[in-house]
Amino acid sequence: MTRSLLRLIAATLFSAAALADTVKVDNPWVRATAPGQKVAGGFMTLTADADMVLVGGTSPASKHIELHFMRMENGVMEMRELKEIPLPKGKAVSLEPGGLHVMFIGLKNPIREGQKVPLTLSVKGPDGKRRSIGVEAEARRTSVH
Ligand SMILES: [Cu+2]
Image (cartoon, rainbow, N blue to C red; front, top):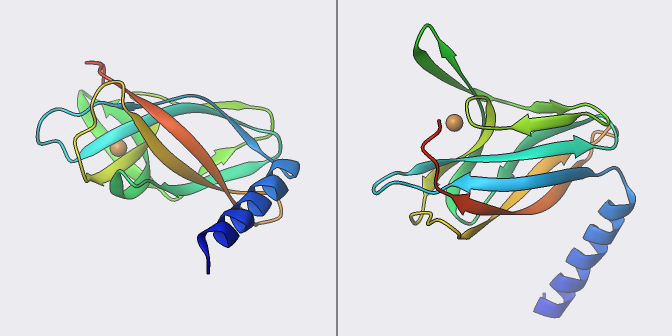
């Protein structure tokens, strides 16, 4: 297939998705890494205009994207993988340090402060169909976990 044809198909898919149920993504960012670090947390606020579910994602920056939940339990950090994160209609769901987040697993390169990291979120709509949402997460350095 030619490159322009692929682009045309992509444009058609995206415009079709724009007419359907969507998820607004606010303030997407990713934590800049320390030397040798192979994972990084990604954060944002998601607001769906229908009952949807975040089911995963992909990024050229890492081998995998996982959905995680983190909390402090008796002074011990507990982090576990979630299969999905519900996005109830009209409710802002915050992915933030110390709670829900996306995890970039197996980083191919260090993430430097100020860098834009592409991320494609996969969400499932009320019809059970999956949609892709492209996001650019800005890398920030912060000491807060
Ligand atoms: Cu995590």
